[in-house]
Image (tube, rainbow, N blue to C red; front, side, top):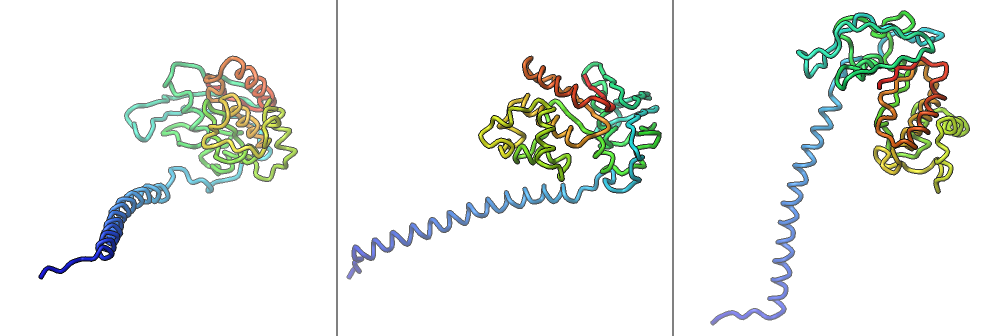
Length: 263
């Protein structure tokens, strides 16, 4: 005759079936996650394996003492991704020690490109850039960038404390030096925050307003004590009140330094 299944066996069968089903469902989900992880890992490996166009450490040390006299002589440049579209054609600029020079012009005319070349993010295709009479292509890119501070329209802040972000320009700076730099940068708002200098700014500084981010970036520039300061549309995205505070801070950091202002 027919075999009968007890209620307990039926319940066990239902539980086991559900467990096996969940297991297979988990396997399919794990397979999908594994594929996503492999794709992400490949992107990371591609970046790690890329070789920079400019060797960061090789090259001579900076002239000592560094005065900050910049000369741009007959510079031609086109971005590697658009080699047939020249951005700079035979540009000549001289910026003497302690001088403030503004680069003004239409959008896309190459103003920011000059800053990229001065910091050796790219190399000119023709011509030369001299620092105190020495071609910067012969200098250590790492040492060169340590002598230059850049304050851009959208400053780069890391997902760390305000203290860590300011110290990025000079890791051995004391708390007192950081506080002095912040005061010079009109960043007194830091001391009014609940956690003060230990306040986390969030990814890209999302916890701070535009003006606050700019003042933290200026404090970082002051701590690094650069000889050359590049201001790439540093106040263009701010409201009038924030612009006044940032402009006052910039006047402090610009004193006795060679300054290039992109307007």
